[in-house]
Image 1 (cartoon, helix red, strand yellow):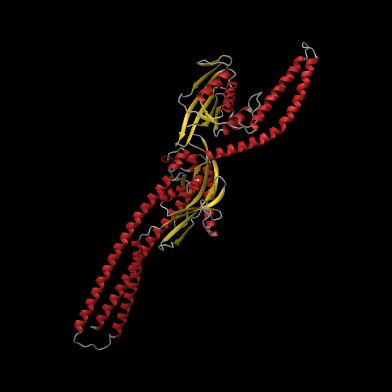
Image 2: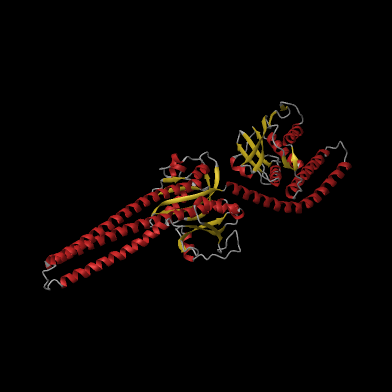
Length: 598
């Protein structure tokens, strides 16, 4: 009987050891699932911080001045808090806030394009929160800074309690195993002692009942934990789907273009902003290589090749790329390496935004600076030229009086006087181009102003517009209800006179001049009137198209190169812009955009 009892205790002990190992394995699986959820959250948080940084870069002035912009980003991305710091760690929107210390290792990881995420506990409520760091560049000042995105991990209170219960279960199992070891040792120690016959059977039955009860209890606990493990697996699968959907929503919502590539340079992600910026449909490009999608010479593919070759991200740069419709645009772009949970490179990601308008404004600023320098130069030399010209003109007129009117030398004297008059006109244009003119803005009926300019330029007013001297047919198509513009009428007439005269001069053999008008109201903010002047003349060579507004650059045999430069200056001084399209041998189109008086 004693040996049977010891054998029973030994088997029971082995059973409990097996159940303990199984339970520990179950708990390990649960911990693994929770770790996977945490890794997935950190991966999403890192991607979210990069996308938020690019969206702030694309709307930097708005982020700096609009207090609601950052709040809207927090709500849209589910962030608890978003901070935008300069290179010194000061909040760019509130310099009075305490400086945020950013560790050197964090800065280095950000520069390498790696994830930089730190956990911390809130002072209030002692709740875990994680902060992701991303680099940002001020587009205007080209200064580096940081974006900090804070989010709560996806762990609710119920799961926290489960963690506590799992810890308690581990302690309980350990205690039970120790108790069983104690009972087994005790059973073998008393196995050799003589036992009383009375009550032996009842004691064995009592011990057996205790073992059966304990076995059923442990089996019940095991069943509960199996159900708990199944629940956690279901939760993990659901959250994986939520994370995937959430990442998809982020990609659809951000204003920056996002293109992801695998290790074979095949496109795996192409968001809506990228479609809008580049003019492509994602369904046409997914699965294609970069060279197949954009061409081997594309700046996107060159940047991707360098990123994949070095296996490291690149800082923000500016590229000129070609859209699907062959239009050239400028983009601010950065590249990062995509990594999996094991920190292995699995591809690359390009994040970019359209900065064509910013580049245009920068060109306008540079043009204004050049005109300012030219004005200072012109003011210095104009007076000297005029003094010398006055001396030459005086001697020429004196010489004309001393010789007879019928003398053959009078022709040479008249030629000298005519050239001096031409030089005087050029100096006047140069002074007009260089000096700062006072502008008196008031509502101007652009329809009426353009017709008056045409009448004055072409010498007559009748419809259909036809100038018999130049054999140029003029077609005016400006809506009668087009809004007035805010302009200095005298300067605007001067600008359009130069443009129309240029178009007529470009059609020496005759042709057609079209003058049109449109009204644009972009999102109810920018309200502009567009005036189009199109001719069918000789056109401008493509390699000279970007130089036509430079002073002294001309394609005319006898041109001064100041007319279009003066037009450009007048348009810029009215907060407008001018664009030109031309094809050699087919004609030129000038588009002038001026603020509407509405």
